[in-house]
Image 1 (tube, rainbow, N blue to C red):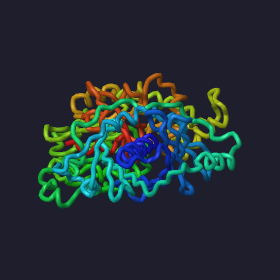
Image 2: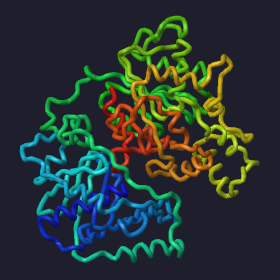
Image 3: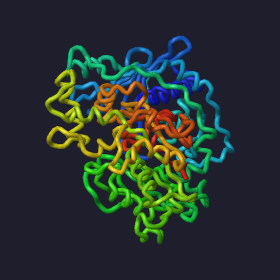
Length: 516
């Protein structure tokens, strides 16, 4: 969201300045929101000014309890929690020139263009540009104010502007001084936005906009709704961390977030719920249960597992983390199989195990600190034990994590690495994260610290190293790719924390949209 706000506010400056010849410095008030979750709003005020041929920007939240402040080309970006007096995150924003270059390439959307997005259709004048691999529309509603800048997943409304710069620095000083005279502490290393090639076509010109409630224009989309006859039943198989076994449901937001909103290709959705704290992938009962759910609506579901072929037909299977190992083991044990009408998509699968299992043993043991500063260790221990629920009494990790060790083999001699070979022949596409911090959430800091302690020595999603997840021959950095390398962590990969507000490489939920 941080860099996207920079882009959008700079877009407003460049676009409006080219039309109205506004002064070279002014301030704007804005409201930003996810289009699918309009109640989740970010309210702020920004200063915009021109230096040479480039624009610069600094902004701060103007809503009590919100946390962001950033400055483009001036200092680091601070994500600051006013109530807890903590710096959640500090990063370096992209250079202003990188943003303005994309804006100067903006083009007018032709008046006769067939537009399927309801908000874009409302715009009287429409300009389009790309940033971080995504298309955006610069839109004016009335006399250029308020202006809206639209992405497929975000809308930013400029509610007012002034020719005088706001006293943002004073607001920042006040917020920080109430907590610490030295200001917020940095908890992350700086990063830059990588170049990502944009998708082939603009979302608002595509009938796929008709698949989502927040983009669908009822007039333009008339007759274009995808019929249930062309859809398939979708099966969602979760990984570790679920506390108890329950009946399957049609939604599972605490694990899968709003993935149900991002899978219009599904005629119906079934989410398994099985105890994956005390059971690892080698649990025969769990393998059978996962197969039974995947066979929903089929006669083969009533055949006794292991005694005859039970092909899963006409389904789309999404498996997250260890759920992939469970399915692979079930296929190995002949409890079910996948025929040519079914697609298996793997999210964050540990197909060669993970070094995290060794570190979880250390973290769960209250008596050993491994040379780590005591308070840091205690913080991680609390997070792992209480937030993620990875530890049990006696200083031991949950049994499930023992089975995810890279060298684990069950009593029958089936080893975790053998499951990779099974998956390679069956998986159609996959998503793998390479950022331990991922999208900003309450899990970002602990997962980043945990990743640094594990010392993967390669990109990782905090729980699974990238090389263990990546079983396909090639991965794209745009969410439209069949196999997707994304700047997100392990939890993000299940759509649990939504999409990033900018960047085609930070859209785990969007990856699920076109997988058939």
